[in-house]
Structures are given as structure tokens and as C-alpha cells.
Image (cartoon, rainbow, N blue to C red):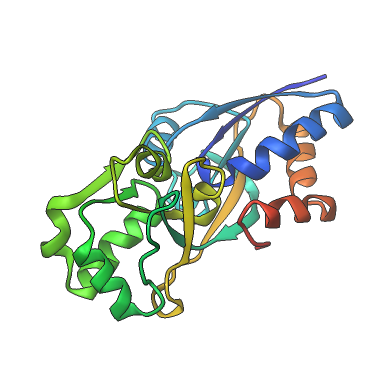
Length: 226
């Protein structure tokens, strides 16, 4: 039996929490998971922290220094677009077109978004849409919890994040995805660390997460196959 340590971002969490216990039961291995915001994950890995497996956006993985990821060690798990949520029972804003989204942003009292891949993209999108200056004072950038949690508590009127990170949050209603013209799809991948103490068992976990049997869980939790 091996003890596998995984450092993961929240986007894949809902599917992961269903799949990993099944892997542990089938393999006999134990998996310890560190849930870390992507921005902190990059810092820790660049600083030399060693784990067996890293799960975050492929783009962030590819930016890690040489020697962190094993050769041919990256495997795509799933992909997800950015969605919008409001507090349960609140009127759902119109986000059906880019112009409607723009007006919704301008009218909102407060907007929550993350420090992860969706937040990096939204910063650029707000600039492109010409609303960045107008909404800057009501933006809330969130790192340590889902943006939906703020919306559920009433601390933000609307929240933006990967669909897979919004769906599991109680107390919110999912409004829908960004309009297709401005949607951004992020691929989330698993990367075996170059110095993984349990490399063989870690590859078993990667194969389990990408097996055909895992696909229904991935899709049900708001993601698509890569």
C-alpha cells in the first residue's frame, strides 16, 4: 500500500471527492489531499515542496520551473468554462449576450471572482469590455473559498468562477455560462512530480481518474472531458 500526496486546486474537487474514495477501495492505496489555491500552489512548488501529484490548470503547470514535473508527466483530466451564480431565490441577471453581461456587471452592487484561472481571464475580459474602471470598486477577489460562498452569504451579489466550482455550493442558483463569444475554457491536468515518492502508485491514480468509468462523474459535476 502506498500513501499518495496530491496538491489540488478546487476546480476538479467535486469529481475528485467522488472518484478518489473508489480508487482507494480498489487499489488499497491511501490518498492525502492538500487543497491549495492555484496562486499559492505555484509558489509552494517553485519553492521546492514535493508531492506526488499536482492537479491544476494545464497552463499553470506548464509555467512551473524545469524539474518540477516528471518527463511526459502531464495528463489532461477535464475542462470547464466560466459561469455565473446568484444567491438562491434572487433574480437571475441577463448574461445571454456580451452587451447584456456588460449591463449586468455595471448594475451589480458587488461582484466576486477568484484568483484562479477564471479570475485571471476575467481581469482581461473586463478590460476588453470597457467596464474595468467602472466596476473596480465593487470587485471582490477571492482566494481561499469558492466565490459562491460569498454569494450564498450575501457578501456579493453575483459570482464568477468555473462552473464545476459553483455547482457544489449550497445557497446559490447557477445562472449559466458566459456568452460563447467571450467564454474561456480551461483545461485542468494532473502532473506527476519529478521527485514523486510514490510515482508508481501515482500513475495508477492518474489512470483511474482518466478511465472511461470516471467520465460520467466528471460530466455530472460540471466539467467536460478534455
